[in-house]
Amino acid sequence: MSRYLDPKADLTFKKVFGEHKDLVISFLNALLPFESDEDEISEVIEYMDPELRPRNPLKKDSVVDLRCRDARGRQFVVEMQMMWTSEFKQRVLFNASKAYVSQLDIGHDYELLQPVYSLNIVNDTYTKGDVWYHDYRMVSVEETDEVIEGLRLIFIELPKFKPDSFSRKRMQVLWLRYLTEINAKTRQVPEELMAVPEIHKAVEELEESAFTDQQLLVYDKFWDMVSTSRTLINGAIRRGLREGMQKGMEEGLQQGIQQGIQQGIQQGMEEERLKVAARMRQLGLSEEIISQTVGATEDK
Image (cartoon, rainbow, N blue to C red; front, side):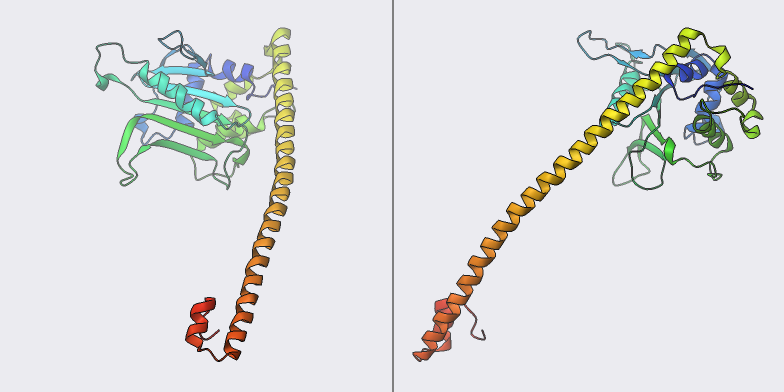
């Protein structure tokens, strides 16, 4: 019986989708929001350098998991993110924008620019609710059918994905099942996955026997790093919650004291006004004069 590695690890993800053009074509066509069959990728002509180097050597470098270009010149940037961080969206936008502007050499026309699709699979959640597929593009606030083409950012929250999402494309569901259902504990891969030639091939690429001892050591270190990072992040979150609650209680107590003092002063002033009004009434002064003097309505 075969043993498999998890396809979400850095080593396995790049091996499956970074070395086999037929697999990345199937994967991208399934997960990207192409409007028609004509828009789908027919051929990946090259894998591009995943390190997005700036033209200015003083600017920031950035590295993605996978970057490729199809026969139409469109670029596809893919990242497998194990944990959500607050700056991840900005990093995705930065990398996609850098890939977009890198197409244009000095003196060339802007019309030559081809779209960049950024596919980001997150093994974590970052939004509330059940929506797990997020499609971002530049649209007019007033007229949402007015779109500036060029960048398309896709985020998928893997933990929210449920395999009964049959309203979606069949291959989309099967590829996401490949990512979520196969791991080190898998001994028998579901038949519906193995029935698809591309996924069958992708599964075979995960067999433990296909990796060297050194690669398996790198694989284990990757998961150790993920586990350690989660522990540190969760600990920081718990500390932050405790400190926030303590600070909130202290601020709330202080605010309550201040509010109590203010309410006491106001109540005391109100009582004093009524006492003055009562004495002025005993002296026979009119209600109009009393009202003007103590600042209360005639009815009161």
